[in-house]
Image (cartoon, rainbow, N blue to C red; front, side, top):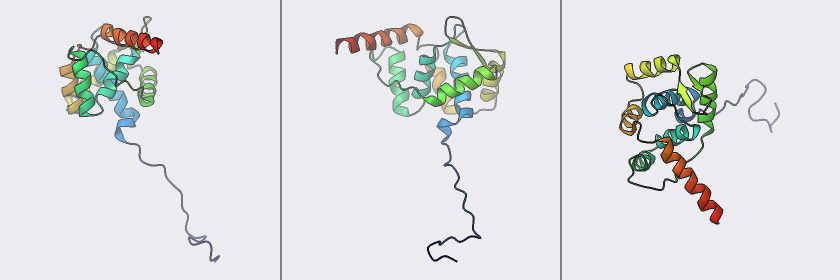
Length: 160
């Protein structure tokens, strides 16, 4: 045995990837997106930015508070918008699984399978914290508020 080789030939070491935190798992994001579309978007659907904003809003208690204040008009400038790649992957997966559809106007809407999936999540009392928050947020975060916010960003960036 080579003295520089401490492990030796008889021991195999196969490194494994680190565990993926639940908040980045596609299955969690998929469930989250179905709940968002079911509980916060009504029949018209939601833009990808709205899905991102609500998904990020579910990340921490502070993010929940800030998004709720913006949605209910208690705060006019909301700056905590992060685009999470896991949300994009989950949206693509949900489209492939026919849980949702992207309409001609660009908004995403739940299909029948997505509604059934969302109902099963609620019936089995999963994601309780998320469901509680989404029921409070409901449809108060409108696409108009998001458009106003993005216009503000556009024009404030143009001044610099």
